[in-house]
Image (cartoon, rainbow, N blue to C red; front, side):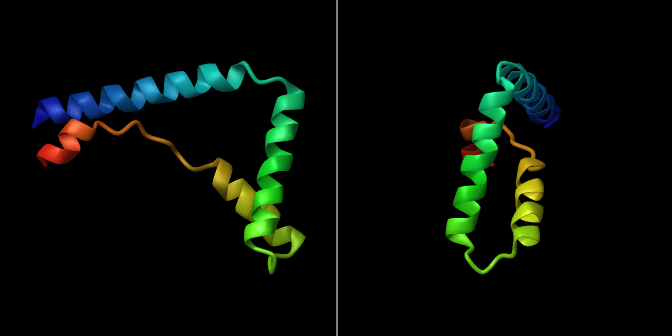
Length: 77
C-alpha cells in the first residue's frame, strides 16, 4: 500500500510541476484571452448568474486542483 501512496504523491508532484511549466509559457495576452473565453462559457451556461456570481464562479474554477490519474491503479482498487 505504501507503494501506491508514493506513486500517487509522485504523480501529484509531477502534475503540479508540468502545470506550472505550462502556465509560465502563457503571456498576458493569452491569459486575458483564456479568462475572456472562460467568462463567455460561464455566461452561456449560467445565464441567470449576475456579474458578481459569474466572477465568483470563475475564481473558484481557477482554484480547482488538477490531478493526474493513474488508470491502472484505479482499475486495481
